Length: 436
Image (tube, rainbow, N blue to C red; front, side):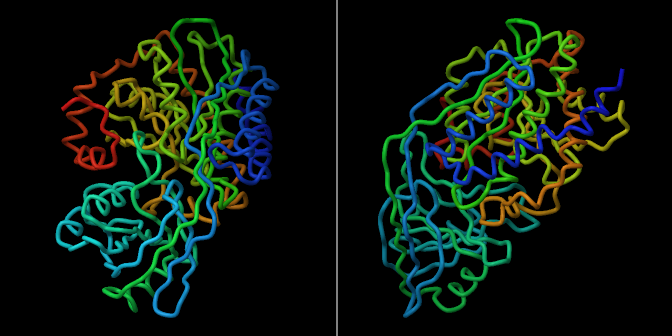
């Protein structure tokens, strides 16, 4: 029976939910808007037929931005604070580190300086370097402030959190500046004194995860996940309203195919992803990893037409993608390497099979994501519907008794992190959970 495909390709359930999320406004972790988005998602899952819909609340470090500034010469240059930057200021010579590769930090004298880095990496470099890794290289090398320069043109300062699980508030003030402001700083003020000023409110707060279920009441389950929070400067349509809309659309489709599910499917929309995977980390600590057959984490879907899956070295996950791609004669790209960012990772790091599902892109980094330009009109309903068809079939496959994906040992994950040159970055950001 393929009538479900026609129903899904004409469905507005996910798209309407996406529109509802972006219209909330601020969905920053710990905010009233984040809770409203979680409640909206819980209610949407119940409407499409999922059972046991609920919110699970947990404590987080709250943070709200105030006014920030970069002062250079007689200029005040536009910037925004990076979330969880301390409420602090520093005045010191600026050092432009370009891409901010580990070797750039090794070669520079940053003691008592303001470090500025780009948000991308060069084409020749072997791996992506996350913002937080660059920030903590700056901290470790004695910088007193951090300037994060967007590589995407358009006068768009980037956001993105700093801080660690042990110390949620960062060590030094940190701001994001646009590509154009960064170019001006590099041209006019490299080696000259600048002031970086961050005004922020730090307080105790709460976030929440959304849970719902379909299928038989088995001990084993397949997790279908996203994150519902977004940065406060934009609508958060691409990151990650689209992912949560996808979770709701998949629940809608799977409710109509529930009799085909041989394993319980649990839908989870996490809170506080953007400030350190806090919601998924909380869930990982509370749940039995052995009961999880697979994770389908949607973070970056819909922004392009073709799906891309980080499969983290799990052969069974690759096999499931191959089966769906062949069945539908449709391109689906897999990346076998580890991707230690987003809400699959608190589980995958211990050997739980998990995908990070996104869309293919020729761009380095997030594109419009984490900027004011992350808005609704940049997404297409067609892409949501097409991808939902493929992901629905994938979840049915993963929930089948015929599909077994073997867990990996933490030791195997550690070995891959070392081989793929990811371990150094995780150690410096405080994200290394293993005993060395």
